Image 1 (cartoon, rainbow, N blue to C red):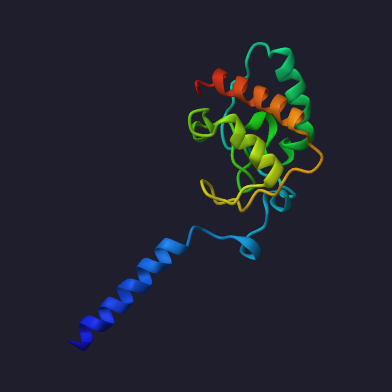
Image 2: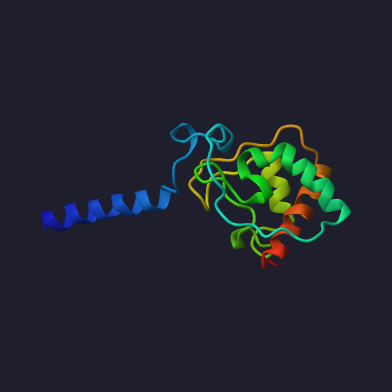
Length: 146
């Protein structure tokens, strides 16, 4: 009977670890901004639209100033730094526009990728992020992500 009790306790511990562990957090990993000091290539090939809307052009300027350092040029991600935003994980039906607004404002705990937590983005307004979203969505559509 002692074997079964020991096995039950071991199984409970393994299950508890599986429930609580969601990946590295806090001091265990560098933030995306800290990782961005490394030089890494894009994670995906991004097809650029022939033209961008006026709002997407504004969004591109804001994206290049605030987001590209981590998420790479044209939202292609940077291997080892931050994920591509031109990826089906970020399609509108899974990550709506509000998710991007909240991520920029509050940061995001790592959950889809293992790059570490995303810190809040300093110095962007909700209006800036809305234009960035227009830009990213136009990139996504050009790459078959609707």
